[in-house]
Length: 179
Image (cartoon, helix red, strand yellow):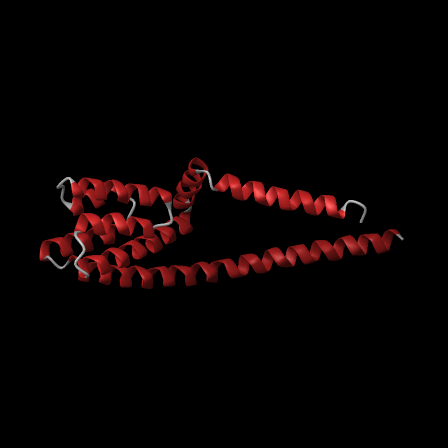
């Protein structure tokens, strides 16, 4: 009770400090890279980011925007800095005249399935339509992965909460027994 305001001030200052630290490009890039390496979450983040990128790029290409410009604009839709920087590099190289699919495949940041859709779209001259289909497939895949992840985490959370409640009850019972 005596130091409640001090503790509250420290918690607020700590939260603000963490927020400011996470805004620094190097820290954010390290966090994004760590997220992509996580077993289930990394694959999920890749699929979500690829879906967002494909949907944006497909819409721009279908709307008649030139591919290099559409790539540069679509990179802004990606929130993961590692994937965004890789795709920005692809946009620069496409602007210089390189083919899109080999560059996307070389980055390794998008799912393998995405490379196949890019290749098919480029070969059939229907890149916009194939990217829209890719986005649909990746969104379905992401939804399924999220449902599986929730199904896995539900028992884990239940067990952790049960353990916490048991610890609280044990501490109260110990205090009552000591009295």
